[in-house]
Length: 86
Image 1 (tube, rainbow, N blue to C red):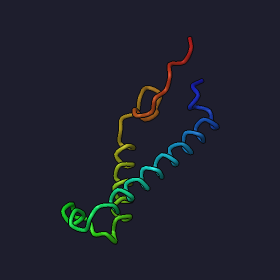
Image 2 (cartoon, rainbow, N blue to C red; image 1 turned 90 degrees about the vertical axis):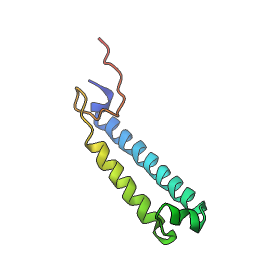
Image 3 (cartoon, rainbow, N blue to C red; image 1 turned 180 degrees about the vertical axis):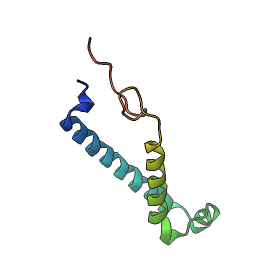
Image 4 (cartoon, rainbow, N blue to C red; image 1 turned 60 degrees about the vertical axis):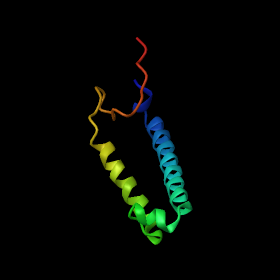
């Protein structure tokens, strides 16, 4: 049995993924807030919509991840898993 097939491992994976996503979101918002109004206008973002734009982009990327082809075990192709011992 692979480690990611165990319920505890899936819970840990989901927790780590949630923490990673939260850090990415906060980092993107921080980086955009540091930009000048002119820079934000150049890329088509209004300052008061930064959080909304970041959330929309993250949701779009999450949807792309769900569309990835599954590997032979049915997990996402982006998920690394070691080969089971023989």
